[in-house]
Every structure is written in structure tokens, then in C-alpha cells.
Length: 212
Image (cartoon, rainbow, N blue to C red; front, side, top):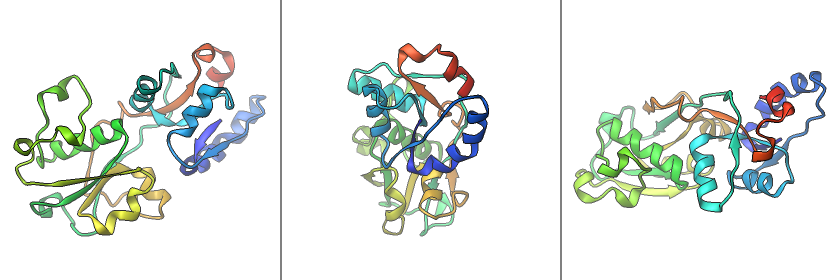
């Protein structure tokens, strides 16, 4: 089972349960969010457990793969806005710098969080497609916020240099920070629930149904 480094504790919690079902399971730990899907598509692991379905779908589109998320999903992780400079969204000044995830799915999620909080507006295309920071034009960003892209696991290290960062709470916890210290959070957890992902030929296999 491929997991990201911040998910190894989650794997350890269920390892004994999976072994009790008769499966010999082993975690393959990855340090980023791309390699678990690369390894799965190449066949070096049997499944992975770290991502939400929109991220998997974006990976499939970008790489020509057809990975499948197994139902039911296992967890709906929190996505929030964090700051060490401001105690509330209302305190964020014009021209503030926001750290945003550099992958398409979580960047879209962060921008939608900013829009929910009334900080920016989204383009008309947001009704049917993911939004990126290049689409947040001056008319949609009247307060002239600046967006800095970064790998989601690295963003917590930049929090003191920015006005706020937008990312999944698990990355704050993995960096030794308080995941509950958000000043705003998204309301889309169900859409972004995490689950087990397999190659299409294993989507209906009994072993993944048992594990999931």
C-alpha cells in the first residue's frame, strides 16, 4: 500500500486489522504526492491511500492513466487557511501574500476557500472547471492579493513569510503545527474525501473490497 509520509500513522492504525483479515500488508512510503500514483500505474505497488478523487482525476488527465478510487471512501480531511500574522480573515490587509498549493486540484480548492470568505471572486468558468491563480485577474482580485505557489508539504515552512497559506490540515500536523489553528476552513470535505486507489483491473477485486 503506497502512502505519503504524513499518512504512515494512519496506516499503522489499520495494519493489524488488515492482517487479521488474512492479508500480508506492507506500507511503501513516499515523500511527495506524485510518486504514489506513478508507482501504482507502473505496478510496483498494489494500491495507494493518500489522495482525494479530484486529485486522482487530475492526475489521470495529465498522465493518460486510468486509476480508480474504491468505494467507500475512508476519510474527509479538513482544508483550511492558516496564518501566524493574522487572527481572523477580517485582519488580512490589501496586498497580502497567500501561499497556495501548486497542484491543480488543491489550488482550485484554496481559491474557492478565498472566494467563500469574500476575499476574491471566481471567473465564470468556475461553475464547470477547476480554477488556477492565473485566472484570478485584476477585476476578480480588487484587493491586489499576491499568490505564491508551493508544494503542499512545503507550504507550512513558509507560513511566517506569508500572510496566510491554504492547504489540507494534515500537512500542518505533519510539520508539527496545530492543524486546528485555521482562521477559515472549507465546507467541501465530502467531495474531497480520501480513499484507496487501484488500477482498473483491480477495481472489483475481493482483496481491495476487504481492505476498503
